[in-house]
Image 1 (cartoon, rainbow, N blue to C red):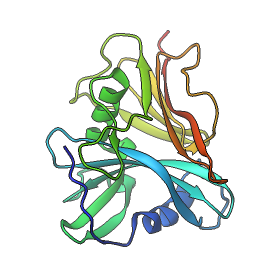
Image 2 (image 1 turned 90 degrees about the vertical axis):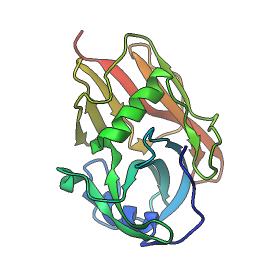
Image 3 (image 1 turned 60 degrees about the vertical axis):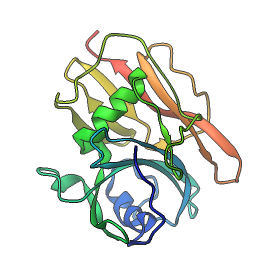
Image 4 (image 1 turned 135 degrees about the vertical axis):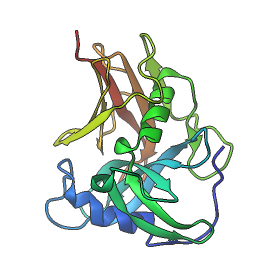
Length: 215
């Protein structure tokens, strides 16, 4: 179980994301740096207790757009993942932390797969040991991958695609839009969640959808 520390972070997560988001192909704000506000999210637990896993939802208040940013936090650099480094932070309790785009971190990918299959439960973003009941999921099929199976991730203008070794693709919706939180008819599975919309209301929608591209 992840322990949530009440402490300081320098720079803050929002500051790291504001500098990083404009480099992504799915960023919808042009060339300007966004003015970010926290809008929600959830956590997943690393079974080994070494890697922090957080799915942060932020809204660019200057151009009302909401983004999903899965991050992992590590106590040392992740080998071969320099391209996925979002930045480093000084944590008031844990010291220096390396923050990565979690789609390129094998620990996050393994736990996201476990969430999709229903083997683990999403955890509250701010309270230790508390499930997040607003995160829902579905999956129909055989086991996707084991924790040691390599998965690649690619970004495009529509989001991030995780390419599973068995031919399935899990698309993460990086720009979030309120709407139906049910899996599309052709999907093998999905993950949905809730966040605070720019107008202050509570919104729900799809966070990720699993497709079988081998068929």
